[in-house]
Length: 289
Ligand code: G1P
Image (cartoon, rainbow, N blue to C red; front, side):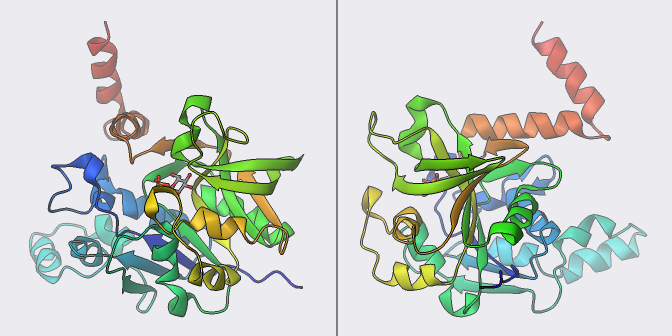
């Protein structure tokens, strides 16, 4: 079967973001900035770099700031223009007309359920899933690295990373098979295994390339870990039917679903920036003395 190219990406952004309260009381967690760009902007940029043409956001109540972010801000732009300011800084927020779709997940029933809510927009083609709080920094970006590998092997692919043994209970965990360069065959998957029961420490990170059949599997997927409909459980049921690989990403992951990870990401990105890097670095060095 020929390998179908990837054109669509699903961004589940319905989560409540309770770990970042009170910051996320009235603002979606995906809008938290790393320096001056919201997390969701980095994820969309990563998708564009990987050749994605349509962004599908699975939203929920209180997430309208995301829709506004990827829209024209008439008043702001008119005012900036009037003051002779360049609008270039807003370029990244402009998606081509029709290149963005929103579907609402009425209840937070889990990642699998969120993805399934996008089934009609995804249709009968492969698609990516990006979790914006896994902030991935690499050249090329994480999804592009995955797409390059996917065009060779097809099937389903997840981003895989080894995590400390005492953290596997927070992840989807892989039973690894044969390893070939950055690709590891996925022989089994378990969502958030109880401590001491994980099949390995190779874990699922929030980037996926999935075949449309997963939508049919999700339809009958019962509740799993945490009483939620888990994407990992549906993917596990597809192993054996189609090629399934984990790609070890060449780059750095920051877990921005976690406060320490989020602060670390801000520091790392700030230090690497041409405009503020020197002063932030000097301050950090001084602070640690
Ligand atoms: C989700 C997935 C999990 C994956 C993780 C990566 O969990 O369910 O399989 O390992 O993202 O960040 P969450 O972090 O939303 O609980």
